[in-house]
Image (cartoon, rainbow, N blue to C red; front, side):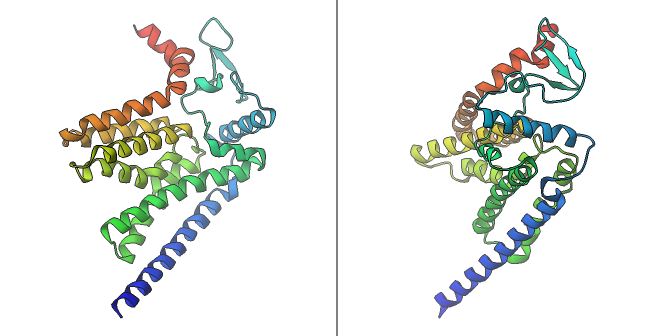
Amino acid sequence: HEKRNMKILINKNFLILSFVFIIGIIHWCLFINYGDSQFNYFDWKLTYPFFDVIKHSGEAFKIPYHAMYYDAPLTQYGDSIYQSTNGSYDIRFFANGFSLVSPHLFLLSFFDVPIMVTIHILIFYSIGFWGIVLWIKKFNLSIPASIFLFSIWSFNGFITEHIGVGHLISRTGYLYLPMFFWLFYKFIEKQDLQWENKIKNVILFSLFIFFTKLNGNGQVVSQFLLVGSIVILFYPKQWFWYAGAVVLSFLMMIFYIVPTAIFSAYGDFLDSST
């Protein structure tokens, strides 16, 4: 009888969480009007060309090293025309610290940009929701508490505000917050784990940071690592393993770090300041 009641409760919670998940999907689809926002101000006028460059490069099997994907006057800061900015963005595709090169973007070969923008948001949302579910299971949260946790994340004003002005490339990573805290929590949950489990935590965390950066969220990555570095100070036994995860993630992100440092205006700024 007790097992039967537990099974009913689990099924009930699953149904409620599934409904909440669908509510979130509807919210984000309606919020961005299924990717066809009709907005032509702020970063929306940059977001669509950005996705369009990736779409055309995928269809042509050509890497857009020097794609001039913004229709704005060039300001040359170096000897080469490729050392130029149009607005606040470098014209070298991979010299921008937020270039999108995530594997899921191969879908742009099959979908139009507005549909792909919607899929892009929903992928971030789904991974974040997965993190929410992990926390719900961890602390055995009640349904009201679970819905509240979901609400302050999915309907967060900071996230919706930035996505509302077209910051799909530099701010969508905040939807990963629940998953970030979950993976980071695995570092400090138990400090007497076997070394195999510690290595597993290192690999999972570094892959998560790497995937976040693949989606262009450089600012989000730096904030994730900053918060993690501050918290980990109180867990000396985990310093080595957390540092290993950070180093491994940086090694995987080297194809971002080097072009940005050498070819972008950031590199020019560093040269002039030394």
